[in-house]
Length: 197
Image (cartoon, rainbow, N blue to C red):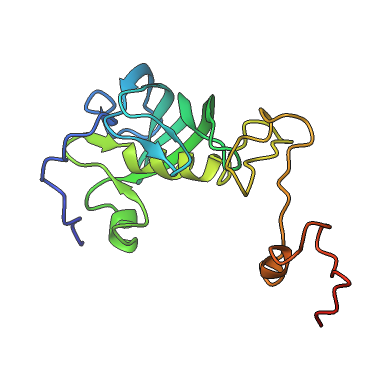
């Protein structure tokens, strides 16, 4: 049988590595994990993410199955970012459901799946980081809003329209006619009757 290329190697330092040595390999064995872990780096998207050094709550059930370890449960954490329309800071919380299978080394599942298709059990531990990153990336909005009716920024001066005075606008002259606006005389742009034509 094929061996996973990382089998026997230590996993890199990740705050989401869970030691499963107590679990054993007997199908049906189960561990419960309820902990807070600190995220080393920001997890999420450009406009909204779990900030670095934020506390991430793990409420997981880790169960031994015939081909590996099944991790199910929830992950929750605070989020921070900015509104996609007005760029004001926004905060919130995210709560995701996690279901992930980690294959035992030398199992049929390990031999028949690609490395990036499924997590692996390495040195009696599983690294939940990629599963958490993927689930959070899918759950966060691509364009977060501070309010569903956020008007955004004024396209001319950049002021937040929610904070601007009512009726905020700028008189715009079409650039094709801008030169003509400056040619008007003292009567507001009407030609004079002095015979110059």
